[in-house]
Image (cartoon, rainbow, N blue to C red; front, side, top):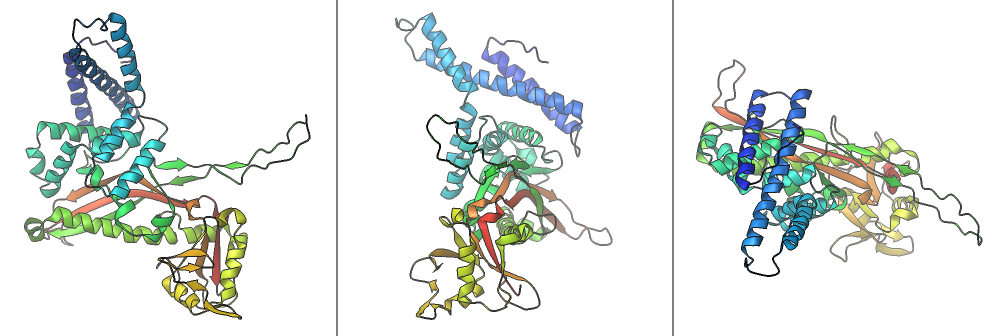
Length: 469
């Protein structure tokens, strides 16, 4: 299969592309409800690679034809050499950054996305090192309007919706299935579908919901399940005499990795509600709200099988990052000690985070015995304490008790805490739910599952105050 024939005409390429799509669909159907065996996956990847190459060749053929048709055949500038130079330039475009450029255009045309979400995805796509990465392929496939229409028909009528798909919609679904297989996502043949680009909660969530952790942390969108990062304590400079070998200032590099964890939301819906309401929009809103609430807690405190919460990461690192007050009462000195404990490297971008009850407790305290003014400054749009903005997080401890540790105040550079969204949220429909006696209840269920990871890359970039310590 590696010795691929050369096709001279666009019709030959189109014919081969149809053969490839048919073969890929048959393979997907033959392995329903299971992952590909290694031999099948090898053939699948080979066919997908050939399809991508032929699609690029077909696009180049069309571009070249349009270019030549726009030139007067009697034009003296139209020579064999000029045609060859044009072909070389165009192929360089095709084999270079064309995929990324198309993905960026798809993102720009995603009119349903909030502007902030489009800007975020533009940064993610531009930061991708490989023009034909999985994130690029995912964006191009799931943003297809044909796929959007096919998904809507299926969602509103899981049984009969696919019967009404047009051929362009079927082709769009086929392309998304190929992307899902490449990303090792179990959808499509299992009765579910990747959520269209403009509805993917891991994209929309970056703009639509106010989560303090997402608002001030570093948010990364990826098509990978595990992503590696590079951190360093920084290089050390030195003063060296003339004509003397420079000292070894090699920094120590760490390579922390973050795994994306699976989360699910299940919503049962009665047949009556399904038939008498705009169910697609309502269920989508419920999914998004549940996702936002569930993640907000998990990003603060680690939950079983979930991402690493910031408070949990700092506690696990221990050492100088956790300050124990030995009391269960807020004092102005607690804020000063926390701020003084944060390393100078992280102070320039530092912020506070705490429960509103803790902010209100500090509001009642003077800066010092000689300055009656509150330690909390409410003169601006965002409250500040000792010059740093305060961000409310209702998932942190708001009441102090001597019976347990109360990790109630964090300061630090929150860009050192990464929230990693993996694109590819999927929706499944359970056509009929059954009760304890295995008889239908007159309901169907909607299940959405997605993946997200989080962790502190540099725990020492934070200070955590523990009352009742």
